[in-house]
Image 1 (cartoon, rainbow over the protein chains, first blue to last red):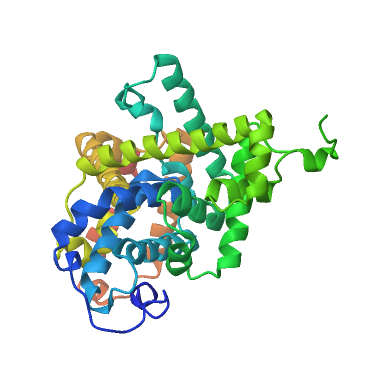
Image 2: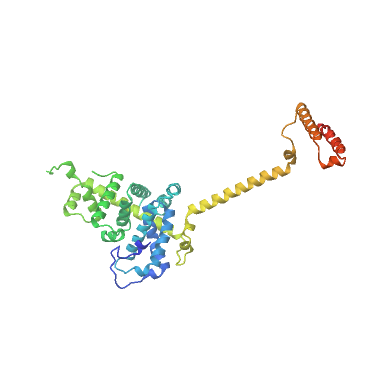
Length: 193
Length: 176
């Protein structure tokens, strides 16, 4: 994917290459896999496809590491590649039927027993789990862009400038998507004026 | 005494709420939160829910990533990307099953036919005697016509008599 590896598109100004962890694919995998997996899995709502895309993303980043100039964060660069791979996957409509049949959404309930128990009763844990499920459910109703930007901001904790670099969108567009996404989540959680 | 505002201005708008979550809210929003328990509770509820989702999705991803095969620089799946698609494996398995099914079915049918030669040799239905007689009469009539017109070289050497005798016996053999 040429688009994903072109630093000019994501606002990374050409300069001296700063090759760090990108040179070590094992380190790249170890540091960023889980984070990318979370982002891609909740963007697509399909954990199996997410794993494939994360593999592709890490390989593309490693193979194209000489294009990385270091003017944006490594994760921002990886998120940009992942976002393009997610878009490519969604554009490829040849196997939509199979996708619908085989879709395996990430299931937070399988990990409810692993939540930290410190300072929280079973009841509050259950409530927190329920709220998290409501957020996950609200995410499914969002458009692809709204979901991507919501995940980048509130789950990956990227700032607005990083989101602009990763998605290639203007800051006003990012804010609009974010506003709509927050509105949908707020409504889902029983709020909203 | 509280100042009465229209309902739309009484609570945080969606824009103000988004700014609050982003941490870019104005002092007036902060003042409103301090004075409005409903908005304050809602803000706590939404930010708490997002925080719970973040925490649980983080745990999920960590757990899931532990079981994943580490990526390698010379991953063969980059050379054959279709290998990593479950659809390709499903299609290949279906094709193999279909091919095997057709082969087994054809083989079973062929073996059955070989084991039952009577089924091949047996006539479809018994011929009624009246049809048999009519056929014999027709053949005899044809023999008669041919004998009368026989002017081949065999006749010149006196062989016609023997041939005629054989032809006249043949209808009786058919009746048996």
